[in-house]
Image (cartoon, rainbow, N blue to C red):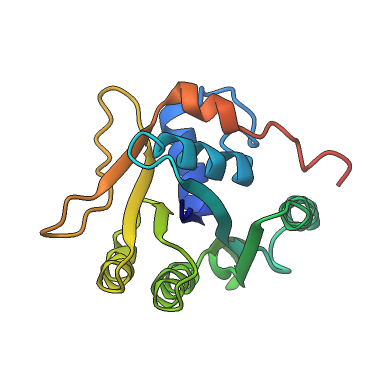
Length: 209
């Protein structure tokens, strides 16, 4: 029988912060919320096997902002270690864009502290979803994010004849709404705390930096 190729697209910072918002305690360390990408991909393939036993993981694509010189050297080294881990994982493709920095503290009219913000990461991910569907890299695209800017790309994937699913962290009472395509019933995989525990990455990439 023909395999159903599943590609998982992960908005990493959105996924990390949503996990912390829902599952982290006040004293949990900064690495709480990190996940193993390939394990999440395999989990999402498994969760869809109830409707299609031919699903196979064809790839995991992750998108994330990259810290620059205005971030601490410790943070940059930790980022590089995590990216190296991802790049060494078969089937995982990594795309990054430099963070944009805004001053958060001033002294004598000069900025003394900066905050990094992602810019263009959602556009990069949206293009990958839409173009990937058109180029037939998958039969199913699973979008792991709560960013509504990705909805037009999901619509393009559907127009190209692909099935689009979404995945979001979930807990009882959560007010987060999964991404939806208007006029189309989109399958959202609600990932609760027990499923997060299956894919969480407790590696402290800051150690030794």
